[in-house]
Length: 572
Image 1 (cartoon, rainbow, N blue to C red):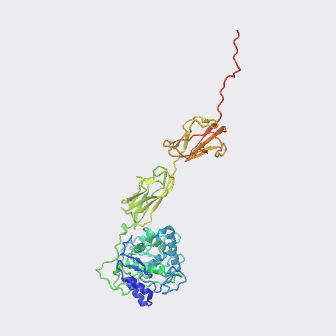
Image 2 (spheres, rainbow, N blue to C red):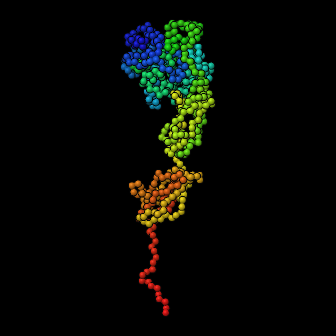
Image 3 (cartoon, rainbow, N blue to C red):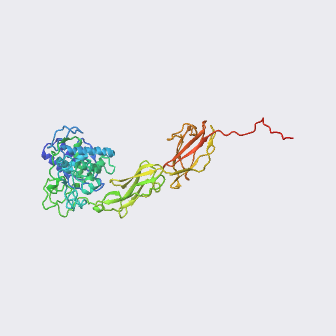
């Protein structure tokens, strides 16, 4: 009902008083199950509020509750040459708009299945900080002064003890949401990005914050073109039905069009919200999730109409902020725990074992975290038992070691990823390399002379044995080539030859391999009609080489007495 009421207001009302009614209607309607209806009449979300996927990015800090201007753009997708309405309220500062669109493009290139629209970032940025306080940013997109939410000390808000030693929020006792997208430090530690390529991850920079927000919203393989996934994403950012409806209303508005305005000329919505300048003190709390009233720090009662609160809260009323998992028990991510270079010869086990560590929001180890190791890429390598994916739990020291990894016969590189099972946290990726089997020596198994008459077949078979570091070199690739006798030998076009499967003459054979004993027997060798001494070169993977002599010559004639000659008779 509230959403439909708001829709009628945006289409027909023109007075500030009516706009105030719309704000109050939106703020007061917090019951689960309310659908959002766009101006076109399309229902965009249904059902009750889904549970949060992870801890809220903002720590469920307060936010601006202002609705979009009453006069909405008429042309969907229009982004320029629109009139400024509501004292520049409908415009987006140039750097802020550029950051949202850049984040959309980056996600489109790296996670196209998410289908992140920049208008969603704009809606969240509007609700969280009034588009970085109306675009008060420098040439690099960094706010002139930090934008800080209230102290999350459990008094009317979540209780989140300090996780960054005050590095981002200046508070070494409790956390505060930071920057134009209002990330709490522990979430920024996991999701922080360098969106403008300056080598830093700064929550006060709109390019960094917008990209981080985009990746956070896309987590868990969400498809934001689906209403249910978009709702879950927004609620994971700040778990409140009223917040979802406010963001949805701005999202619908920006989808109808907006325009660029100069940095610093945007309006900062009055009232509540996390987007306060740090010099103006802690902001007051916004309406709590599900439309209930949060206790406000200090003895002064909340004034009616300041964002949905109707008066002082009874001391016996418990805080409505969802309970926050203690930082020591909150998984912040998984990291490499000292795994070295992963290399192995084809068919052998990798000597190095993959080891990861799960850390909590305080940077300490976290036990009993489920970690999944997955082999990816063009490879026949596998974990022990022939598996390409295994799931294990971390121990008391927060670490877990993958099973032995065994190389297959396919040489090349592949990837092993370690991820926190079922969590939308960045994985740890390891590159593994499989090298082909090698030999450093190759020799004939006998010393028989290899001869044949022109146009015949060599009677003896060529047999060689390959070794590597004096051990049998099984499965080693060997190339056999009939070569010239030049200083730089090349394939000979005459003399002995092999036959391929079709019986055609060939003088080079590849894809030969030694057997389990390191032995290789070459196919039959044939002589053409040209007599002479020729060379056969065998080369192994690893560089071992042998050159074998082949002779093509006519057989020698037999010596017999001439018929006219007769022995002399003895003298009588």
